[in-house]
Length: 483
Ligand SMILES: [Zn+2]
Image (tube, rainbow, N blue to C red; front, side, top):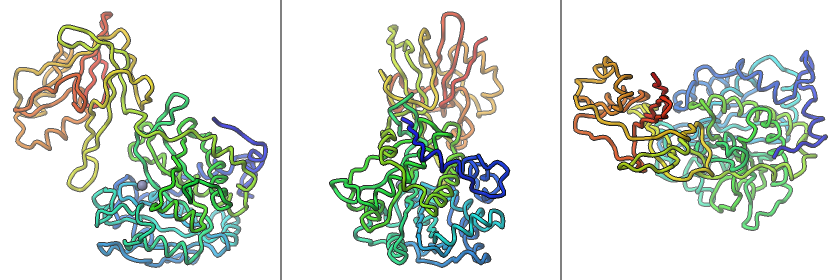
C-alpha cells in the first residue's frame, strides 16, 4: 500500500531547477518530463549490442566533465568501460546488463549521459559534481548481449561469481567498488515479465526493488538501511506513474550474488529489476522510468534527502511473486470437449522467438494453464462468461503460400469455424514469420491442428455467444469477428 509522510511530501516539492517556472513540480516529474529531450536516439530497442553503445560511451571523452577508461575486457575481449563524472566525496556506482539479455537500464544510462553532458541545468549539475562522483559500468556482460543470453561466454551466471571472482567481468565490478569505496550501488537488471504483485488486481510488476541482505539473518545495518530508505523514496515517486505495479524482491541471502556482497562490502546497494509493462514490449517506458529514478536518486543522495525516510516505506512495498501473471487469460468460458462443456479459465504466455541476428522475429502464444486461475493476474483478459470455446477446424484445402490464404474471404471461413490453414511452405521460418499476429493459425502442409485443451499448445479458438457474438483467439490476439 502507498503511504505518505509529511517529511517526504516536503522535499518532493522542493524546486530543483532555480529557473524553472513551475517550482511546484516534483523533482521526479521534472526529470520524467525531460526524458524526451535526452533520449539517446541511436538506441531504439532491447537488442542493442556492444558495438551500438561503445561509440556513445567513447564520445563522452570529448566532454571535460567525463572520464572514460577501459576498465577491463570481457572473456571474448570486448572492452568494458568505466565512465566517471563528478568530483564529490559521495561515490555512486551503477552497473547494468550483468545478464546479457537484461538491457533496459543500459538504454537509460545512455540517456543519462546525454543529460549530464548537456549545458542546460548547470546549477544542479555543479552541485551534484561537488557532492558526488558518479561511476557507470554499462553492459557488464557484452559477449552474450550479442546473442541476447543471460550467462557470459563461459556460461557462468556472473551474479553467482561475487565470491570467487573468476570471470573478468566480475573482477571489474569488484575493482571499481573497492577503488572508490562506493557509497551507493545500483545493480540494474531485468526480470521475467510474469512476476506479479499479488495485491490490488494482481498486477504485472513493472519495477521491482531489493535492498539485498548482507547476511543469512537479513539484519539491517546502517549500510543496508540507507538502501532501504532510498528505495522508500523511489517507491513513493513511482506511485505517480505505475501504482500497483511496484514490488519488493525476496531478500533471502545469496552468498554468491553481487548485490548481497556489495552490501556486505559496505556499499548501500539497490537492485532495480525492470519487469513488464502494458504495450511496452521494447521497454521504452521502463527506460524512461529508469532515467527518472536514477536522476532523482542523484538529487536525493547529493542532498541526503533519503535520511528521514522511515523503513516502513520499504516494507510497505508488496512482494514480487514469480509466475503470478499471464499474458492473456480467457476467464470462465465453457470449453467444448467431445460433446461436453466444462467451465475453465484458459491462460496464455508469450514465447519470444529470435531470428539469426538475435532480434525478436515473432511471438508465439501458448496455453500455459487450464482450470481455475482466478488468483493470477494478466496483461490482458477476456470475460468469457456465457461463451462457448472450441478448437477451430482445419480448412481442407492446402494453399500455395500465406498470401493465398489472405486472398480468401477468411473472415467468413473463421465464422464457419475454420481457424487452421495449411500451406505448401518450403521455407518454414518464412511461413511462421508471415503468419505471426494473424487472427488464425497457418500450418505447414504436414502439420495438424494442435490438441485442445492442452498445455503448451499454440491454438486457434472460436469463442461464441448464443446472442451471435463471435471472437477468434489466435497468436495471442483476440479478434471480434461478429457479423
Ligand atoms: Zn539479472
